[in-house]
Length: 376
Image (cartoon, rainbow, N blue to C red; front, top):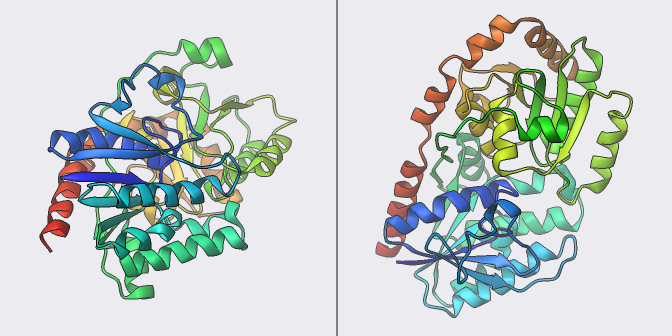
């Protein structure tokens, strides 16, 4: 079985949720005898932690091809999805697997030539504030409609997304959650050298810095509480330079707010391993890998009460009312002032999430879906 992955930036990478998923999932599919090719955007490069892991245009038996595009905000993803779709259509793939709604705008091309197509909706991207209400949002919504019409099967990550497609399009979808692997915890070394951070002295968020992630709520709430903890914001812009500039302006009078920029590898592992508390104040999620990671590292978590978060954490995290800065501040203050509550939240949460979400199960479910598509 030969499968082409389309719609991501670059593999291997953990630059975004989709890239993280494919970097983990594709090698597991390979172990199930799936011949996987990832069409990487020609303008993107792997980050430092993966340098040396790509040999002869392969990563862990995954073939890597370039999808030609231009390095221009708003156009890079669109062009790459079309060049990848065209290239894959005229190659000997059994299935083309599109990731995210925008790239699915190109799905009509392989379908016109009788190719079987699967799509994974990692989130309802047209809702994300960074795309506004202009052409980008309308284009993503167009991709959603093409996907609903053309895809042989659609994978969603949450019950709310499943309900959305049923209610909006009367389209059945398949729920396959993301997974998580047991991480290796690390002592604070690199983060002490780089950012002067020590174990249990900081609250953190690991996220793309986009409005729907709610980082502005977090900064406003943190500025209003009394604590000697630091706030570490680990992540970088995602075509959202103006938003990030506003975040830094909100934080400019508080020396305890630290922006690390994009981090990965051992530095990221140390951030998770030594946090007092991890936060996820999102308004919108598909199924957050950073939430799964935080729990897998055994962290206490404070997250918004959207269904995509609460269905993962159940009673193993503290929740606040979405978009409510006052409630977020109150919960932050409670957790900063009560170490026993934080300790209770940490107790056994790693085993809870690791038993609930397995990448091996994701790979098997995806493989079985591929077989179903090919049999129909």
